[in-house]
Length: 303
Ligand SMILES: CCCCCCCCCC/C=C\CC(=O)SCCNC(=O)CCNC(=O)[C@H](O)C(C)(C)COP(=O)(O)OP(=O)(O)OC[C@H]1O[C@@H](n2cnc3c(N)ncnc32)[C@H](O)[C@@H]1OP(=O)(O)O
Image (tube, rainbow, N blue to C red):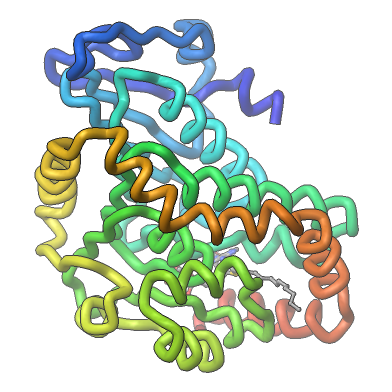
């Protein structure tokens, strides 16, 4: 984690906006020592590009972990730290999450981090997955997922953990929690996030079958909030964010917390047990065999 912090997150200015300082809606100035120029200089291996326009208060986090934005340990750590930095930056009021990879928002958790590794690795990996979700689901600022490609499993979790979901209207894209298709099980907090998004009955069917939805079906069940032509996704996300920014921050934030805190608290109360469950589950021979088969099928393009 410290290594990722040292490497830093890439921040780029655009338009006439200042990066990291000044220009916030309420006239406050914000500068974070962790956004020093030396950090920026050494951010070329960054897996997430962050553009913050402090004149509007809108940040864009763009996933750039080719080929498919799978969320490995490094990506997850960088994601959590990036969110944390923006949460501390008073010039940022909302974050748009999107992908720099064509056709893929995120392929979900990196299966290679769950296959053939040591229990210590599984433990570290799962803690990073928990950290990311805890930060995003309990985030005080506005988050909009601009889902510009397929978004299975962990990618769907990130989308659902955002406040609003806009998906590119491309019938080839899919979104959903497909864990059972891999022979694994979405943990209770993935399930809770989905129940809170689409309701209990839809979650029962989705999780058991590992259903992946087309954009139009995702819209029907409320898994996404809006479909737009692919080329308009970022502009629509920015316009939508502007509407959310009209709401006074404190009132929106308390409302969000009222709705989400009980779900966050459930994991906070059982983090260690959840990690223990994950490690013993994922290390089972039968589960490793399932994941091995799924990886082979992926490589043979049969998934
Ligand atoms: C008792 C209860 C206890 C609880 C226990 C908890 C258990 C664990 C819960 C775990 C929860 C969440 C899990 C996940 O998120 S698992 C990940 C699920 N993801 C998927 O199934 C997506 C699989 N990928 C695809 O469908 C496609 O790749 C794509 C994303 C639609 C992209 O298609 P494409 O044609 O553009 O690209 P493709 O050629 O398939 O892939 C390119 C290379 O990337 C590799 N790859 C794809 N996805 C992943 C991944 N998730 N992890 C690692 N690697 C991935 C793919 O193999 C290709 O590699 P290569 O080029 O052949 O080497």
